Length: 359
Image (tube, rainbow, N blue to C red):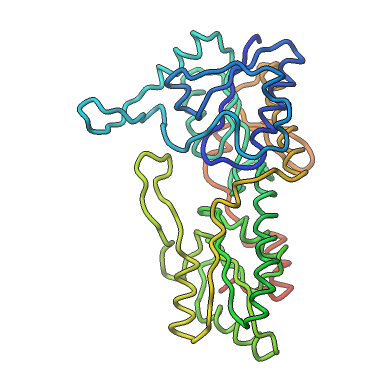
């Protein structure tokens, strides 16, 4: 093993630079070179590579974002091209393989969520030596207890809830915090419990608006004249659909969710007369410095990926299971997304505390 390539794909999240740092420092310790690929798989198609030295990763541990850049577009198997002035998808996966070969790359370390790792799996099936590293604030990747970036996103949402509590109590209002998570409710659940929310709405449990309103009204009868609702962006009413902000062509997942907080606020005001305000946390959840937990987890993932490469184990993703970092088949990791099970211990505990889930 002489040279590894690394890319960061999909949405950015806290801890990406920590992983890159761990990979470079670990690899160089074994005398292995590291080539950085700029802007995810776009750089792999366009041969936009840069060598990564120890100096390049010095001081990046606490930095948010990624020094390599990233994108959730530009799938090499359906790469956007304009042969006649009209964008058409073209399979350029062979160009990626050729570019890596020309640069004497022995293996690719792909840092990403389910979209990027699905692409990595396709390359593994074409014979490329690939190792996946699980990244997403949504925590929705199978076969790993936790993805890096998730805990920092939860901390950000929890801090927002702490701040909303004071203004909600002062004005006797219902406050809704809309958080990310796509089709899974992990961020909403963990942040809601940590931030003392009264109602937590997640995609896995379609909500009955009457139950939500009744919870708020019961609190008012008990002298609690405000309520805090955390709504995952993928939450949906019973018998209804998720709120889609818009469709975005060219993205690996073209569905952009958003607007559930405004819908719930409108419904509570129109049907129950409850004065409601909405805060959409948005990309604040992705930004900023990773917390201590994510820095440690990212470092463990980066070194474990290099170890897997040196030991010749490919087509796998490094994963956290219990307290150990293990290797699982990439196919198993991206087979389907990890949703919050209804018997999840934290969800059960939240119900015991009287938190309402709208069902």
